[in-house]
Image (cartoon, rainbow, N blue to C red; front, side, top):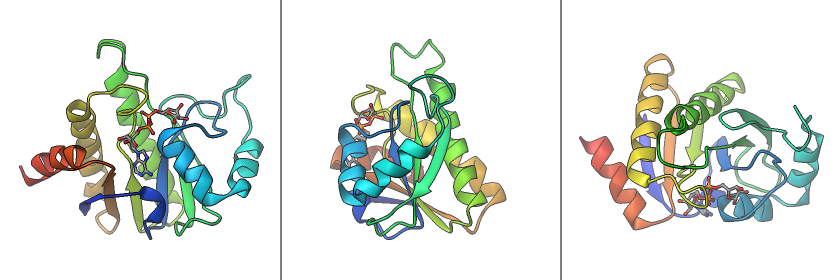
Length: 171
Ligand code: APR
């Protein structure tokens, strides 16, 4: 099932929280910074061990990698890298959809019964929240058809983002 909450994803007591990371996957600002601060230095060390697929890239855009959650309430952090939004005509939607699909599959493969997503790519990466939320809900609905026992939480940091998801899911 799908749920919408508003608040800090690092506080959620779910099996996995998803991090809106970058391809280097060693931390950053936004939710990436918040998750690394809350998880502690061990998370940085765990990310360092994730093999680079090419120089400076541990997680290509659209893919996902899993690490323990360390000091977080969540058992796992699933790191995914959303697209940088340009104009919607450079494959952004497909890359964002892949982030949700790959993160959900990785959570299921690791026995997670609950997973929380931030609004991937809608901060620094500039993806319009309405378009991004539609992709998130569409991919999650598709996934839940085959995994109806998993709870997916959309964790919105602002009331505005929460309203966008509520309009989508109520509909
Ligand atoms: N809990 C939940 N959501 C949060 C939190 C938090 N503690 N902090 C920020 N957010 C929200 C933002 O308000 C935004 O809605 O997460 C969403 C994603 O924004 P960003 O964190 O900027 O992520 P993104 O747009 O995907 O850009 C990723 O930013 O921080 C860097 O290293 C990161 O380079 C990467 C880029």
